[in-house]
Length: 235
Image (cartoon, rainbow, N blue to C red; front, side):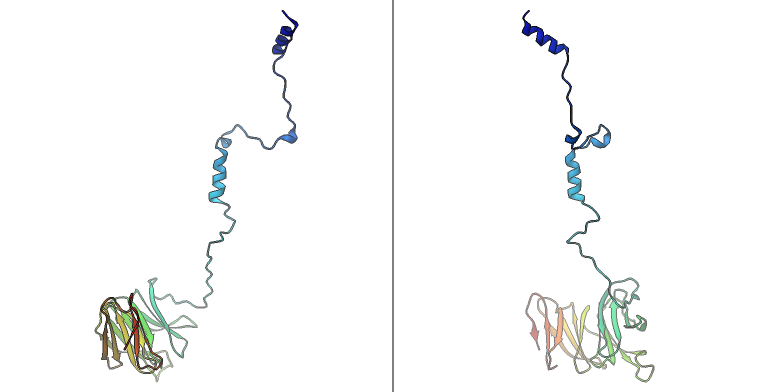
């Protein structure tokens, strides 16, 4: 047997040489417990998807309630219309509870309850001088109230009349100087009444879709209305 063969056998009998690792070269330890069984890429995905809850989302909109007053008497139902008085700190609102209310802007207290509708009140508005208020309902009725002038300022209102003609009423617009009211309906018509008599002055008709809005012109001699997808018309 050659000397070379003896040296190879001696090397095999001595076993593998020990490997020494410098602790300064260790970057991380991976344990043998169950917590370390999941693949590393899953942790990366969790970080990418979930993120840190404490990091704000740049696209998140934070709404701040900076209102100075609120009115909550519509029995947690939807409110469809709100209008303010031209001179007093009053507002009128109408909602899904089939009611209209006049309420104080400073205190939020109810000034008057405007009932009588059998469906949602979708439109409301004070007359130009603030002496009358109208409510328009999905029941096709316009109901009118007037301030009782000789009692307690603006706190008392009396019912005057109920006018009807169109189908479901979706908007109201008072004349800027007179007691004339226009109302738009889902039946493709706009009705214009003289109030408080309730006499119809004019009925305007559409041929394609309901009028979605109406406005008296600045000289108060014409009325403009519009409906989608057509252009505005005037009379």
